[in-house]
Image 1 (cartoon, rainbow, N blue to C red):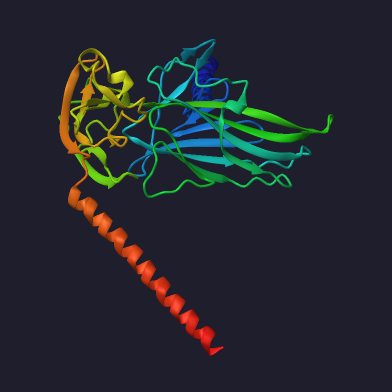
Image 2 (image 1 turned 30 degrees about the vertical axis):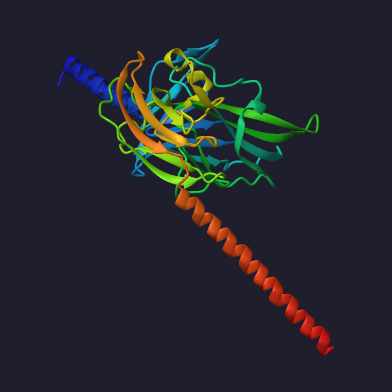
Length: 373
């Protein structure tokens, strides 16, 4: 083999070798890109959102109603005031809870750590450009977890944050409930002793934002049907607990689901629910209540505020343009049933009679004992 052929062979060998080096050197970079960063503090690794610094790590994972883990959606940052916010988006109808794991496996430094808190701020809105709370005033945020650190020992803490209230689960130290759709800001703050000044210092590890997205009411279709149960007020009048016998509108913004009242009492006085309803054709009506907080959403409690009458209760679904999509109505009454009233009177009289008889018997027994002595 002459010299030129040897040179060609060596050149080909070197090119192949360099190719393998390049390929293998890019493999770690490829796998590293499986974990992406959004903002300065948040990393996303598969289905896990991570807040982390040199001392603590907080992991967030979303779970659906079947307890299966979910992938949150990320989009371009949203401009909120003078700050760009990266949201993790979940559909309200799908997300059941956030599993939050707080850990600090490397607290062996000379620094003395003293405590940790997890804050949450909330705003019920579909406009993600609104500000949740002041980043500089933690007192406006709600503490949902707090612990004291002894001997720099901070074991892994599992924490569950349900987006809605649960009927079969109670809130506790490691379980809290949210407020449905809207913006949630979580912030982890830990404290330590500043050796040079010998005072306790709070340090924020940053914030992570979740946008819980309601169903688009314009895209939801279906009729509604009102059902109810009855309890009694302190004036022995019927109180109606109404609900929609369908899950179709469970996860739309409740502002589009409105309950209204029209009624007439035994003196032919006409009523609406609140003062704000006395507009237009209802100007001559009386209001049962000055205002009524919980008149939106899939459930409604109707208390006539002591007025005996017959009422029509409406539930109306509106679209984003204020047009009626669908509605339903039920007729109810808060007029006392006379036989029911007499029954209560008889019961009260029987109780009074039993008390009188028992008192007489007690007096007789005591007098007999006095005579024996």
